[in-house]
Image (cartoon, rainbow, N blue to C red; front, side):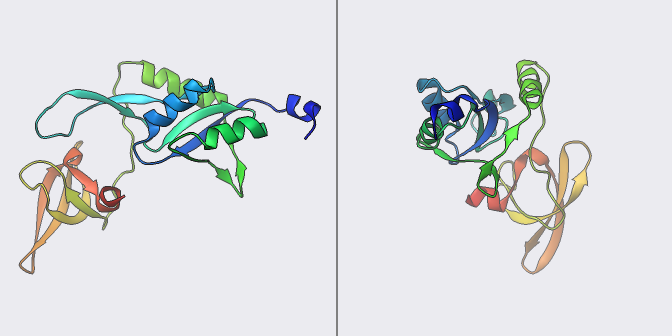
Length: 178
């Protein structure tokens, strides 16, 4: 590639997939390399049993946004950052994120209003209770009940029972094993 071709590259935002729980490491690593990076974070209540404090977590676990023109040198610097996996795209071609989407995310996380994200549970999905009196129990998601609670089927001794639990106290089993 000749210098004129590199000058024609356009800087855009891209989604960078990271290793699990490496979002902060990747964010800091790219910032040290003076590569523009954006890690949107939100405040949530800690799910740990011993404390109920507000903590900051990534809005999209496993992802950060990086602004680059994808010139070969910078592309290699991005993907060889500790914890980086790959730039998201289709058929090995990275797909840019519209700048207005990034600006919207920046506005959302800058405000004090709660931001709700995540993958909603689907009927029949295997779940585990991670907090409360049923912690450690596995079951099957049935349906949402009310604003913050869910119904799950529990099987014990060949019998089924359903129980209403706070949505925050349940996680999809595949996410726990990842």
